Length: 270
Image 1 (cartoon, one colour):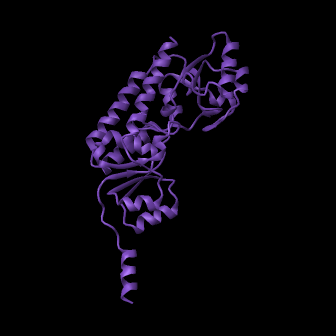
Image 2 (cartoon, rainbow, N blue to C red):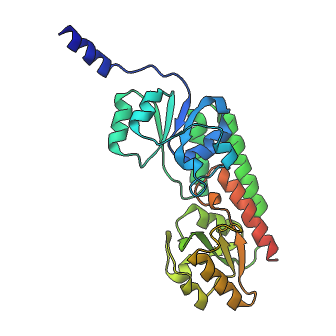
Image 3 (tube, rainbow, N blue to C red):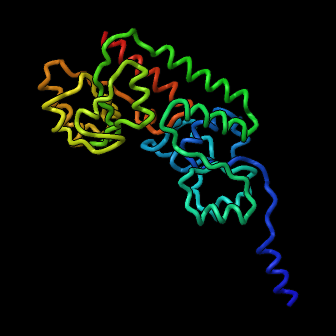
């Protein structure tokens, strides 16, 4: 009976936090690494170590331990704060609650204003409000710098990868508009994010195609080959511009980098 009581006590007791912030949310990673010094971060999500999913530079991600985000792993780390996604499974949420963890659940903002509010929310949670305000100011400065004269918006199609295209109702949609572009996804009947065979673009091409492909990377993919074929038939009427994959995944400080790149592309058209 004594042994059973001791076992029950071990199972129900909650380990004391050992310090450090753990993020299982890749978009929170991008904000967190700029808000607090590395020593305060115990781990970031494994997505940030994947170039196709990360919103932070590879050299920055390499500074941190990564986690797969399982409840068992996170609880064993005994962090002072967990930053997770609003899509976290109910079973995982329940496990965090039973372990007595302090958890901040963040959604995926679809507007710049919502993203700025999220930056402030996260900054408050990690006791770095001044850094959060500085980040918001940087976003606003980049948006202001990307603003164009009151001219006709330029039709642009943003390819995320392969045949996946970003459309209305997304953060990138708003950023395109702020930089003087018109999101052309609607021209092909697309809303939000969806698949668009590149062949459909040939009959009615946009002025600009933003692509994530880097020289020598994915150059042999079918989507890249078809886009090259479209360009060859347009006689210079369509411009293809590189738009790094990390700029389409998240908001926060990524917005400033994305707006700066969009402004560069827009200026090159003038």
